[in-house]
Length: 107
Image 1 (tube, rainbow, N blue to C red):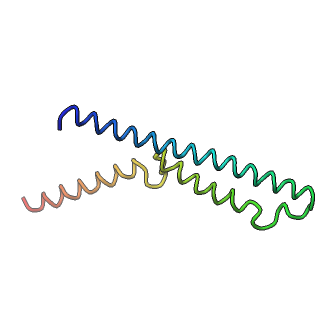
Image 2: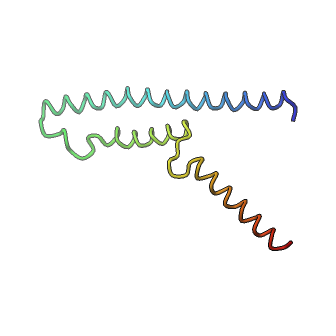
Image 3: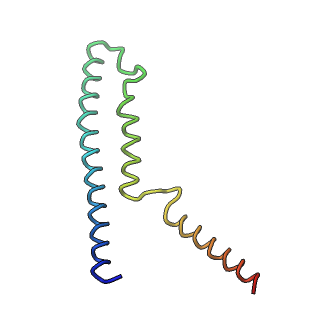
């Protein structure tokens, strides 16, 4: 590959990462705005009725949407505590060593 092709590929990856980051921040802003209205509505109803605050489903939308938002953040920021880069590197090294041992058997 030429130097220019490598630079174009880097630029394309950087633009893609920026678009993903922008999408996450838009998602976060919408989450905050919508759920602020939901929580305010819940608090107003709780003050008026008194018994609706802790009913099932009161915080259903913010909770599960928050889980989705957390997964979105993990994807955008490349955070994977279970199968992260260290795990990948260890697995790659394991398979390389296995291939070397298998190749040594046939020498």
